[in-house]
Image 1 (cartoon, rainbow, N blue to C red):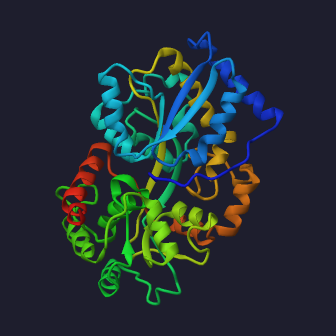
Image 2: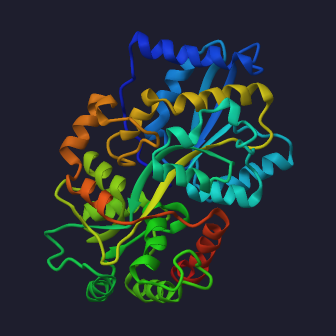
Length: 394
């Protein structure tokens, strides 16, 4: 996910949680921890703060010796790598940590802006292969050592629709194309470079269409590019992010949109999309998994680096990971093992109980799970989509 809806949430309390957080700061004293607390600037380009803001704040509260304040901001994923690159060129980096999906992670790897965390700082982090869920461990490998995965979900691609307005629900790619042709401007997905559902729809189609090589957008996506070009004739415009597609579905401007598990659940929790909206898959469906990562730009001071590595260690504890359930935004959300929803705040448990879909567990278990494109290949796919598909709508 790349753009986001920020939710309110409670703070994990209790002496045990505070003690665990403080112990993390003490253990990291073996590193060259700062002699005075530092202020951290964290930029979110993935909507990840919906899952992590509270545990990030909890860490700062428990470790005032090392953290004086955390400043949060957000930015569009396509714009941030260039901004960091410019700061590095001027030797004035003022961003300490980036919370990103595979999009800005990939672009940043391509542009060489991220600090190499693994194996360079493996000793300062948990043994990731031992703590991650199996598919989350595969997603961590995509970071090539330049990021640490903090949340994971199977993602999509799914279609979301309003049952009162869509009487014949498409169940194949061909039926979706026919429906879009018969109902012009009623289907929509967002620009893949800045949308989790848009990106997942792009990478999921080659599996659905049985294209020559789903991992090669240059030489293996002939069917996919032709399909996207054709269905684009019946799409009014491509939103710059996911949130507008949800609003337009809720308002009745669109009747079917591309979605993911989290983007299905959370906007219904927030009332942006009606509760009665339904989801479906297209024949040949494979999950294209997704994750959020913590990345550190090159140029961050050693004092801050020591604190950031300790912070990352905390963010992979079950206590912090339990917040990833959120209100379904990145469902399920945790990247590490043994984090049941019973550890999550009651607000998360209540939201999933009311707005979650019981069928998701079976869908996740019964359908193949594929990795997204590798970093440089994903950048290529985004560029090709922008030129071949997006440019036709200005």
